[in-house]
Image (cartoon, rainbow, N blue to C red):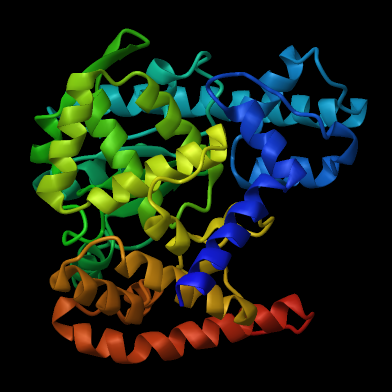
Length: 407
């Protein structure tokens, strides 16, 4: 048994270290900037570009390629990354303008928020503020202010997915149990906002609310606005938990953690250790730091027991499978979904946490908008969830095979 586990570990590590495209991707996105790559001739540049987009590090790679003088990349690839960088810069300016609008509107209504990621990371921990990709704007408000914050966003043209409509009180109750954020989108400028009321959907995993994070906050100046963000140790710990929740399928999160970690003082490290012990998530931080060492520094893992459980092959896959959630899955992904579930169960040694993972795995949050029932009907959601999830998987599989299905 031990021999098989060791062989599995060696295979998983080899799958990362000997994947030429992923290896170049990690060296170009590393904070160290020390690229020692000797296999450029073996690069499949089209796959390299697809991996960069899938991992959402295309602006970081585009900037790195622009400054590279030690190896040759095909002109068409360089041009494609220039186009990706222009598209990213356009979205960055739109998101920045939207953030300023929201800040002014919330201030006018005496309502505060914490900017969780996005500019709060790139403005402090990246060499260039535009080097980090951010698809949406993540805001955290107090749960008591959630309805008022949603109404302000709606008055500014952002539309939610239906949870805040007058007849959706039951859906909101269940949605607040299964999730920690509601998405808003504004068509006029194609900007999206994730409005959070807690740091993680599962309070048995990370039980942080607005009041908790406000005590660990800092501030940044953006366009002469003072915006509340997480301080460095809280940001580092939060990013570790966020990556673990999604089973580490995106390189961008590791690039974030590497950069924030490089700025931590010894005192900050003690704070991170205290936060992980208080939440019982020491394995989460260990997993993040083990991955950082493996991916960016090629070092042997300190925690082999954690590394064995990590879904390492998800990092080199061109397809995106979000942390075990079936939203983008096909029938062939069911074994990976099962392995990810086992991995998530291993993150904490708490029976209440294990039970909460099982309950949330049986429920499909997409059923909340359809049924509109409150949390009192949790057992019904758990009973229907596997069947509705299987039906959606089947419909997705049929569509990929060219069959038309009714929505």
